Structures are given as C-alpha cells and as structure tokens.
Image (tube, rainbow, N blue to C red):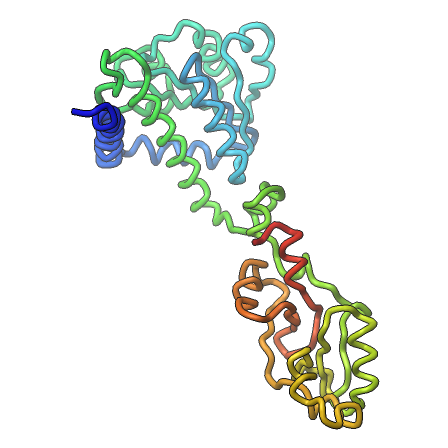
Length: 319
C-alpha cells in the first residue's frame, strides 16, 4: 500500500466510524429529544450551555448556532462559573450541560446552581447512570459508539455526536418557531451569507434616480434622460404610470435612422424583464444573466419602484 493509499484509508476509516455512529444516533433518538426541544421552546431567558475541555468547545459552537438561529444563547465556562459567572445563569434560563462521561467534576457547581434555583437542566452524556444524567430534568444519552481515535482515547466520535445533537436541537427549534430566511438575515447581515439574503429593495435606486420617460416623448429628450441618470437605459411608462418597455443601447443602434424624430414608444423593447422589491438580490442576478446589466423593480401593478444595476449587486457581494 502506497503512502497516499494509507493516508486516505486512515481518513476514510474515521469518516465511516463517525458516519455509522450518526446514523445509529438518528435511529435511536427518542422522547427525551422532544422533551428537550419543549424545554428550550419554553425558555424565557437564554439557553446557557456549558462543558469542560473538548465538550466546552462543542458547547461554544452550540451556543453560537442557537444564537444565530433566533434562540438567545451563551456559553458559560464551568470553571469560571464557580468563581462568579454563575450569576449569568438566571431562573428564566435553561441549561444544557455536556460531558461525555457525565462525571466531570468541574460541572458540579453549575449543576447544583440549576437544582437550587429550579433552572431546567438538559444533560448530555454517554452513560445513562452518570451523575449528570441522573441530576438532569431531561437526559440526552449519547449512543455507545467507538471513538475514531485508533487508541480509543481522543474524543472524536463522541464530540461529533454531541455537535450533531446541538444542530438537531437548533433546527428543531427553528422549525417550531417558523424561523424564516428574513429572520436569518437579521442575525447574519455581514459576509457572503448576508449578501445572499439581501433584498432587491435594499439595493435599488428609487425616486428621482430612476431614468423614466413617457411613451410619447421624443427620443432627443429621452436621450437626455438616459445621459443624466447614468444607467445606460430608460424605462418607458404609459399614461397610467406603468412600465411598458425599456430603451437600451441595443435599441438605439437598431433604430439609428431618424432616431431623434421618433418617440420612446417607437424605439423601446416591450414587456421588459422586471423584479419585485422583496425578491432576493440573487434572483435579480439570475434574471440579469446574459447581456442585461440593469433591471427595473416594479410593484405588482407594474408601477416602477426602482432600478438595480449589476454593479450594485457586485458591490453588495452577491456575485
């Protein structure tokens, strides 16, 4: 076996072990999971998550996932909790405590705090008779599964299972709360994800910035509007103010003969592609695929609301 084959097989073995464990976990998930979701749904304060060592790293990620999906959450380090940070955990909160063995000594104070103030405690561990799960109001037992570490020592499969359990709880909460893409954008305004969830109405130019002309206006005046507004196009409206066409550079080239004596209605391309202000900016980019560089934004009745240029989408990080 070559070195590459040996390394690939080592990696595949880990993924198979952890994948099999996740499949088994999904099949074994029971009523305690539903009870945990109900407990989190009823939380009036924050979801506080704690764990020591590798479990602490997983707890931090779980808290971040809950917080970004509409469930206020925070991580509290069990060691710091014993030295004052227990004040972060109130009677309005719920508590998720992670420990593979269920016997982590540093968790004793935070568990005792939960019992003293009747704070709902969800314990996650791999041993059903562990101290943590026996003290918990809701006990989530991780399935018995071998660690992917060849020595069976380093937390690998167990941390993957715990991480996936946190995702399962967060997604279940999202579904119960009808957490929408718009809600998601509220917590992710920056970066590529925020850009993908940007609405057309957030980027469009409106009001006096729109290059609009009436259908009966002469083209010499229409050209002035196109030049002044700087979009390289003009929207053509009828007597009711609805958008009925657009004039682009291509329309100008096709109608050069006698252009200045013709009307906008004579030169325009009818029934142009448009988009609504509540559509995602990604949809605007998709509609522009090809030679279209600008897109008029219209209300359901066809009234122009704005115009968006491909450069607006690029600046916003859509493409």
